[in-house]
Image (cartoon, rainbow, N blue to C red; front, top):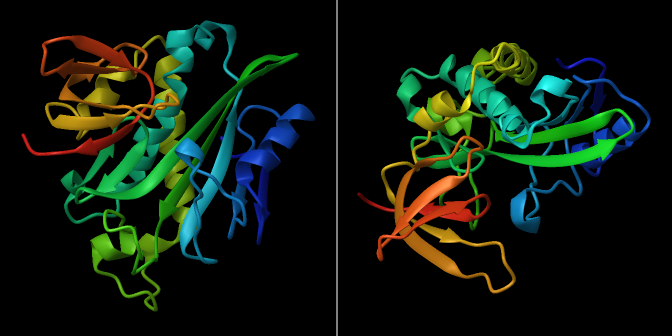
Length: 255
């Protein structure tokens, strides 16, 4: 995990760079980190931007063995990275319970978004490959126009100028990769990651609004009852209909 490793002072997109390396035959575990991205992207076509040195931004290549190539098992590969990131953050927090996940791929600190993940699945001659990108806010103190965003520095009440070891990007990345590798080992041994991933979702048991990804951009509301084995959200509408949603933009509400 994390080897071979490329580290760039500036890069358009770690996802795009790693995709090119994958096309050239990069092995599972290859990783690209950028201090700054000029065309970084998140879900739903959004951009992911941060000033140099303020965030941990990387992409990781996974080439699953045949036993992990079913749709259900492929869907659990990003869960390993999400659980790894959650574990790495909790090592640094006075109150580990302040960190949680939000369906489908956000990390929360005290209920605010601190990180987002993007997953891209493709096939080549070697079989399926999954590239997972993560952007984690570390040192930012302000998020103009993004009232629901936060950073690890804010969660720790750490001053930007302080050399707080808990904000060290290399150490955080190493802890994250070690934890994610342990999760992948469990998956390879036959353990399903979905139950433990679901247990960390702040989304479940809440009344939510889900903006669908279809062209009409319709919005659904309902109770997030659970997740399917492949991570799809089980949403119970006011009419009592149970829907399975595999993509969407979720807003949490009370309840």
